[in-house]
Length: 265
Image (tube, rainbow, N blue to C red; front, side, top):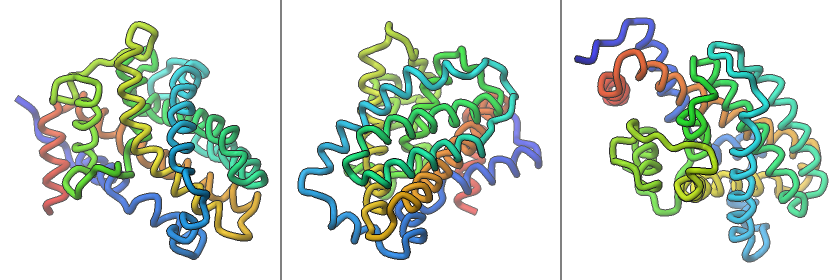
């Protein structure tokens, strides 16, 4: 039988829930640029969303192949969040200098940096980077904190997104039972997972581009936007892997029930 969470772990879960259910990236971007994101969206060329979708999927595929393997497998090690923020700011500055034309170069770089940071956070929460399930969970972070175009209000919460991603790769509705390997043997499943994640991540990338399109931001603005972008996904990762750590300790149902109870409270 699942055990109740201790007071300290319940406090950790409360922090995780606050991170995972916070206002979306668009609200943060609006606060940064001082103008509604819609203004930037109106400035994007016709057909740009289709191009973003392709670039996003390519960036996720490259990040999945490369980022985790640059880290040592040492569960509990530090996550070096600040170093990854600096790297993302640098790539964002370059992207901001070249504008929309630089996205195809900048996004794979910044996505790989974010994937590496997400993997480091996973490791700091006790995950083994040799476990294929950890790689899948790292990719899932890119789908958190944002909505897909087909979502309704009931489908955008943290647990709802995990269920939706599990269903997208043909696994059981019990999202926590899925074991999707990040290797060549699981290419069809990984392709479906990346497609489902790209659907959500692409919307957040579009919001990022819209913020960078606001006049007078330039290279400095691109660095600020990318810092906010990676900070958003670091928050999602910290919340996600805190929940997974507690699930390993207490069982999935106990943690899910406590998480939902915090929302009701």
